[in-house]
Length: 360
Image (cartoon, rainbow, N blue to C red; front, side, top):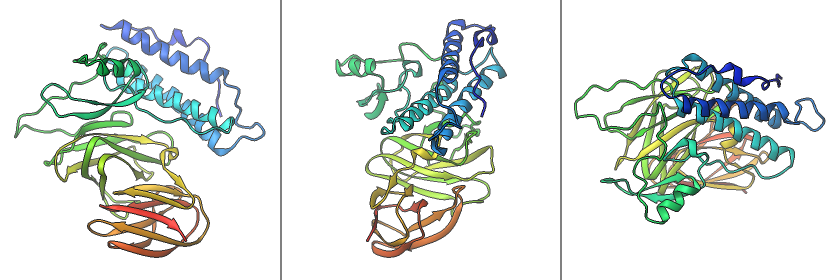
């Protein structure tokens, strides 16, 4: 596994263009990640190295390479926000690697600051009401959290991100065009007229889509094109009165996936991002949830219980090593259903209501 990534990085970035200060910030961020990789003590072949450790190192290296490619493609019109998100992915991978080596709990993953990605990783969730809009929960850095607590209106970001796009309302009836892949992160607003979005697949595989909303919502995510690797193209998601955070399997074989977000009520802003399997919740004895999700069962073969409440049919599906559909383990409607766990692995819960999985 290649490790030499640092030394002389600054010479690779002869910036030109109308916003050299912003590009210089990105140059410094890429250089810093490369240097962190260069000096890191972990070696894939060292005694005690595990596949999980090697996967985190590979994720960090991939993020570093992707950030360089995104800049090198067009140094004049580079979009800053996707590069910052890619670099954040690399830094998080190194933090996970350090935690695995020290046998510590994995670091919590927060998104970049809502108001400006250059503020860094968000520190907390706060309630914020934009002018003329409804209140919503957003993730912000510590400084912006203080400003909001002091009732200072954030207005626009303190340092607008070059290349970022401001969301505008399109007049009814205007033409909608599919969004192009955006480097593993897509955001939007749940639409009743079914706008198509595209999520670029990451270099690491397999992966999941992490779908989240700022406020409570009930939506359906429907994938376009062929259904290879899926038992269904549609996933009902719900937060049971809270914001949604759910995972959807992304089977291998495509460079990007096209999907639509359909609202089952009030429209809500959402974010979808590609993420490694580490984002999937693990359990041995019991886990609870609402709506469709992916879980990682760490127990043994044996009897299990699926309890569900809510409308429609619930299904528990076993996934293979590539997160493709393998077999339906149990299905039914509201109530308690017994079944046999096939063994350790990844499972897809497909439901519109609340549910609980356990062993007996």
